[in-house]
Length: 88
Image 1 (spheres, helix red, strand yellow):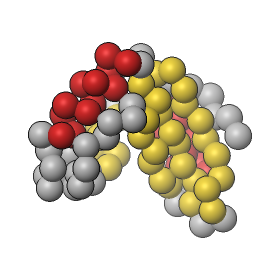
Image 2: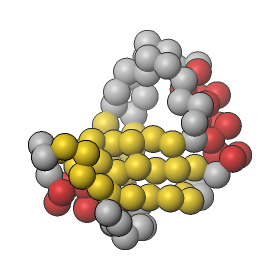
Image 3: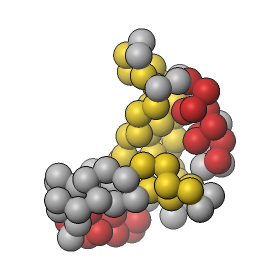
């Protein structure tokens, strides 16, 4: 998956988020996969570890996914593992 945009930014004082934006082909794949996973858990793996396993309620069709974290440090670690630097 080619990541076009990855940003770290304050959402609220109590959580930080990392937003990943996919290219057109990968956005289409994400839409297909999430569309088939309604009401099922879909795990996000990073370095072989489950980062998150939310239940899919709607297909992700915009090609953009935002993950929330309790601390800026956690968000920074994920951004670094994804190979991107954090931006405000």
